[in-house]
Length: 330
Image (spheres, one colour):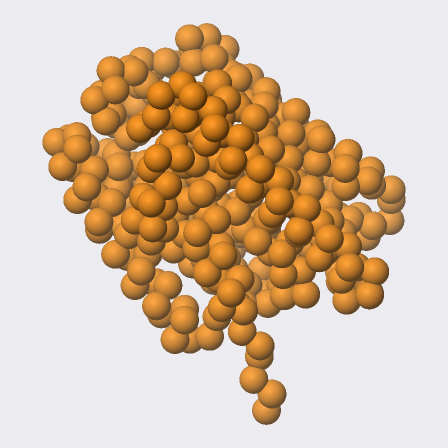
């Protein structure tokens, strides 16, 4: 029996691309804090890799990835950092929970929706899309065997425990039992839904726009989402939900067509990554003055663009050879 090929290099790449996208490309952390990437990788990278491997081992696709990405968002922000419930997260005095506040739940509608989107679509979705584009011939295949899978599970668990301990040391905050319990229940529910969804969608004929168009559309929607000013309260929440709906409907409608390719899926990740990199220039990252901050933004965006160009070239080459013929969003 022929043993399946492994792609340890792809797994390691995703392990570090996920925290890079989540914190550095976004503009939260500066170039000076780049060594911290190693310490954030177990939670961010371990989570993205665990999700990707579970999904591909089960022969599932992007609907499952995104649903598990939402579960990851709740796990990180609700149970590990507990930022969804902390009125003064990281002692920034930013009052995240006051925007579109829901006092009965002890959360802010704007902050909760923002975190769900940033982790689901960017930390998990964009990272996986970019790295799968680098190894397009293994798009639907698992990258790791049983031993590697077990190692990832343990590393991710370590990341969660360490993240919780560090978060408590920084904040000295602990959410209520009800908040933690409901969050845990929602995480489990999302996991169940993720694997209960149908494995594939019926394909149909019909035109799709070129990948550059879907990439630009995603870039524009991403920038619009990130500019939903929190001071608008429920107006910002409404705008974010509309943008989510437009994006998901676009992808759902187009990805069901036979002419949808891996390049289109990659374009969605590329558009999201560039949106992050451009919006970062409006951020004030930790650990840097104004000059170092912008230098870091330029370098991080350049790295993202380089990854995109390499992924596009590899994916286009595989497509030209006829190795990738099926839709990438089953």
